[in-house]
Length: 135
Image (cartoon, rainbow, N blue to C red; front, side, top):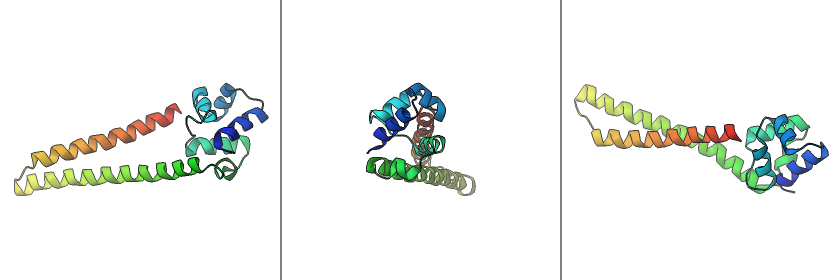
């Protein structure tokens, strides 16, 4: 049984509408509808909320559904890489300013490219946080 069927079963056993289920785990009704129709998957925080609210182990929710397991693993590792990339780009900006101050060498092209990449990485993280709040 995949995660969408499990969520629908939990909701039916508890005799809840999608709206009431969503209220109990603090998400939108649309998020629940997406999960139940396989158009989206709950993130780890929502899986924990479902697990705690309805007294179901995370293993029971996730273990049989390989798509959800793979998505959770990929999401957690990609977030780490985005943060590491941002730290690396900040270090490069600091290095550019070090050269400007102590060696009077200004690398404008390098600075523009680095700031551009820093902006993209920051955008990706902010967009991810906004998406998670909506779901």
